[in-house]
Length: 286
Image 1 (tube, rainbow, N blue to C red):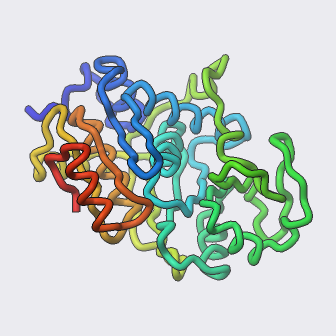
Image 2: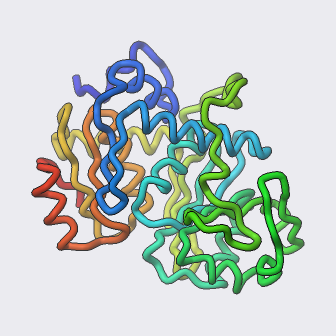
């Protein structure tokens, strides 16, 4: 039976259970390589960063069934947001950072999905300001919630850059590592919980949705089709539909005890070729 299925007798296919199972068995194995960020995470690192997102979201008031928005590229933050939100039973409405996101499409993403938190890359801050111009005059800290009549559910907007930005929080300041008590304790896992809403960044329209069970089942099939084995290095060479492929590529690699290699923020043929050689990738996800 495929290595993906060895979950120490756990009945749940939930993302959190899968992550914790691999962490327990092989904490020091390499799980994620993001070459353009010079990041290499072990399974322990992947679990810690994802848990920090999950605990941070619960700490600011989100609960299972809630939703966060993400307009991010192919990077470690996007991976940790997806896995972290899923670990807390929170849905992610994700648009690709390479899409031409507009004021109107972002408005639709926030309203239709009732997002409580929005994560954006630094190059999308200008679109956020166009949509909510009053943010420019604000100064924020971790304890301050937004109160915007057009988006009553929206409490925080986080950017993944390092500099302080008026009206927005830094992603790193939302993370809660080594939480005592663990904010996730007592949250009931459901493998059919809503997981990913894939949004067209240009229009804001929903392109597809999947539950945690559907995502893990699809990832298992992907791992089988690509013959991903333990210790494989899986090159992320996807040219479109980045969010669902990022989910499936990550879960397929995690379930197989392989390493996912992400060479660039968006598709870049030269970066893929370089990563293929330097990281000795032997499986390609297209």
